[in-house]
Amino acid sequence: MIELHNVHKAFGSNHVLRGVSLTIPSATSLVIIGGSGTGKSVALKCILGLIRPDSGTITLDGQDVTKGDRDAFLARFGMLFQGGALFDSLPVWQNVAFRLLRGSLKRPLSEAREIAIEKLRRVGLKPDVADKFPAELSGGMQKRVGLARAIAAEPEIIFFDEPTTGLDPIMAGVINDLIREIVTEMGATAMTITHDMTSVRAIADNVAMLHDGVIKWTGPVSEMDHSGDPYLDQFIHGRAEGPIEAVR
Image 1: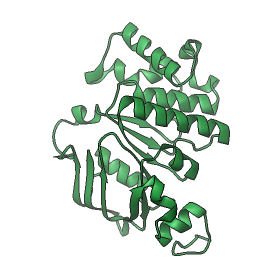
Image 2 (image 1 turned 120 degrees about the vertical axis):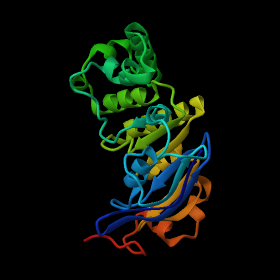
Image 3 (image 1 turned 90 degrees about the vertical axis):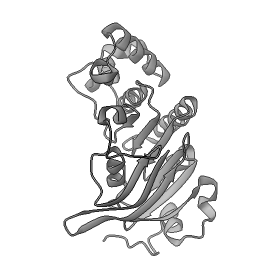
Image 4 (image 1 turned 180 degrees about the vertical axis):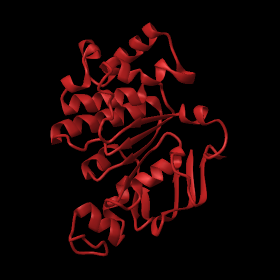
């Protein structure tokens, strides 16, 4: 469904992406791993068209992502942001239904609220949460609200940016299970950025290791532990010694 071919992106003298090539088949879950500053978020933003690559191509269903109707293009995506990115001034249900209250996906107010409550239920939150404000919720509940918002418009493609950051191990496990269940139920194509190897093993069909602006290894999650790739091996086992230099 999504294909990157020899994508380059630099910011001044900082060459972040140095020829990234990657394929994400339809209805599969790809997790991109790699150290901080290796270009994971830049690659995601290039796919969404928030950043234009310097060279190379990115296609969605064979169509160049930089061309065509932007609203129709973005309507196909859902996004769970790293920090939740909830709107403090809006009640929870309006956060969840944000895309359903405006633009090309706009629904009547009562219908949007009904959908929001159903999506909150799907992520394990009761209807009384709908009228609370984000500040009244725990970090884990806020993350669930963010997940409900990501799926509210029934997207074909969902991006998850560090979905378990800041959560305790139990809540992180809950979020991982929810992501896997929802992606499978919806038949969605998923792309996740994470440092959490527990998340990788819980939600990935395929894994891609990004380092120094290129994909060092990609393959099924079942082959990750026996890849033979020194970069991947060092990263997944958290070893200080190896080809990846630790910043001191």
